[in-house]
Image (tube, rainbow, N blue to C red; front, side, top):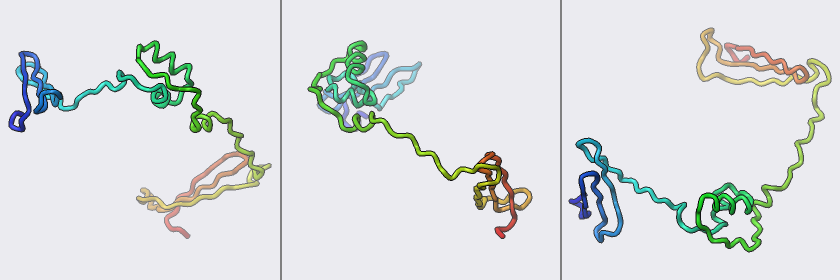
Amino acid sequence: MLDKGYVQKANVKESTFYSLDGREIVAIARRKGNLFKMMLRREEETSLMVQSIKVWHERLAHQNLKYVRDILKRKGIKYVDDWNNYVWTGCSYGKQHRSSHPNNPKTAQQPLGLVHVDTGEMNIRSLGGSKYWLMLKDDFTHYRTCYYMKTSR
């Protein structure tokens, strides 16, 4: 690190590397036994920065404004309250009620009245040599069975 022009300040417990101007910390090495363990990733606590309440509304999964203000106040996080009765279109769409899925009129009224069939090919042959499968499902009883076949005919 010193060969690249960084400035180092060290004591018994840790060594800190700064940028060329000495203002920005590039890396910290903490002592563990006889070795210094390098921590190259800086941890920035961006949540401690003063943010708009709109940003916090987005970060907290679009919770309502009263909840966002309450949680920020309880955690002691400073924020700029610039809401001004703004209506989020995305939140409005998400809170609308949806109608339920319509019932399917094509349901069976008796066993074997409607049978669903599906076939497919397996990637690897089974121990018995089968390569294809045939699935049959009765719509009324929900009974299903699977047959394995060596050929597709």
